[in-house]
Image (cartoon, rainbow, N blue to C red; front, side, top):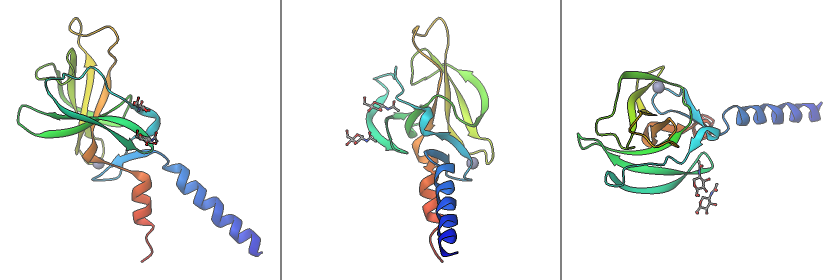
Length: 156
Ligand SMILES: *[C@@H]1O[C@H](CO)[C@@H](O)[C@H](O)[C@H]1NC(C)=O
Ligand SMILES: *[C@@H]1O[C@H](CO)[C@@H](O)[C@H](O)[C@H]1NC(C)=O
Ligand SMILES: [Zn+2]
């Protein structure tokens, strides 16, 4: 009897861990945005607009973060993902792009509408052949689900 109770506890714990493993969620509402397997080191940044870059251990994977400013002077720490659970807002634009040859479209959280980043897609014929579309996500706007789990599991 005692043994089976211990077993139940252990299996529940493992389930909670793996459900959120490597997941990044919206800081505002907790909706799942992307995960470790989707992370990429974004390339092709405009060096003149890049303030600096660094590597950040994001959900266990060192990922390039580009620090960039928009024409309004707002600064963002941006990392790349192949896919993300987001909705588009407004048209694709090439103006003032941080990744030459790539058009950007604003991306919002599907649930709460918070700004999450931009979808970058090649705009022919301005782009290089090897450039692939990706999502640039604002580091400050997501948190690790593993981290939020440990917060919510704090005993009262
Ligand atoms: C980014 O580049 C670093 C250094 O080459 C590498 O260790 C890391 O795994 C790369 N990250 C991703 C998300 O591909
Ligand atoms: C990330 O990079 C740092 C410094 O290069 C290294 O010490 C660390 O082990 C790396 N972490 C991962 C998860 O690759
Ligand atoms: Zn949200």
